Length: 208
Image 1 (cartoon, one colour):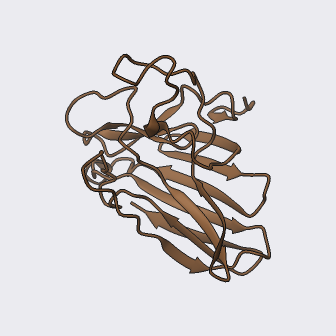
Image 2 (cartoon, one colour; image 1 turned 180 degrees about the horizontal axis):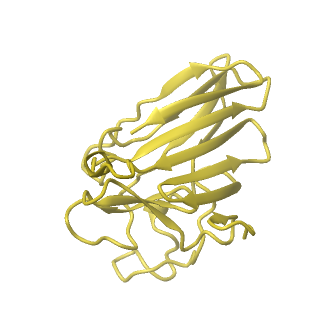
Image 3 (tube, one colour; image 1 turned 90 degrees about the vertical axis):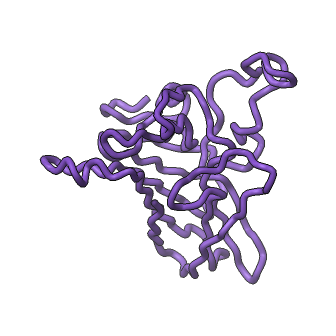
């Protein structure tokens, strides 16, 4: 755990959930390891929950070959033996699929939360792409109207650490305006956004 107030390293983010959303509009939670959890946008509490397969992901390409692809999550913290009592879900069955624990992800992350802004810096041993995810609320002091907008805003700062990377792409399976992707009969469509990179360089994108 960092000595700074509001800063947490791996091993100390298990109980961290940062609320995102305008005043009185409900919220979604940004977990300390980058997961999107606790969607409370239907006029009822929804603590300790996930929202289907909600996540952000990034990949890097060169000469039309994928060099790395990961979800923007850190390791799953907490119990790995399973929870709950539903059929094939619970103790002994491991983490639920919605935890995305089996997908490639970042091994190192640093969470900083100081309302109305949260920031997670992701890094890995392969040192191809470092990503800083910033999420913030529409909080404007002395302006209740703008502070009550029903939005959560995200920015991604992507740093190219390798000469082998020429293109970076990022996505979410959720519609960018709603981030609503509960399990349905249809598979969510992934819309990759790609931009060229020169090494070394940094790229910034916004998602809301």
